[in-house]
Length: 86
Image (cartoon, rainbow, N blue to C red; front, side):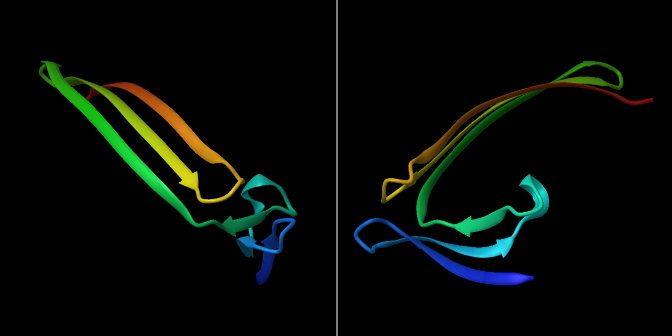
C-alpha cells in the first residue's frame, strides 16, 4: 500500500519523502524519493572472436549527489561476458 511521510533535518528542512513500502530490502523497508543530481557514463566494447562467439567488455560510472547532508552514491561497474550461439 502507498504511504506518505516526510523526513526533516534538525532545522525543520524537509530532506526526503517516503513514497511506498518496498519489500526488496526487507519486510518493513520504505522507499524514499530524494532530490539529487545524477551523472551516468558508460563505455562498451564488443568483438567477434569466431563464428557464433563474441566478447563484450563494459564500464559504467554512476554518481548521484544530494543538496543536503544525506550524502551521495558513487559506483564504478565493470562487466565482461562471452556470448556463444549455434
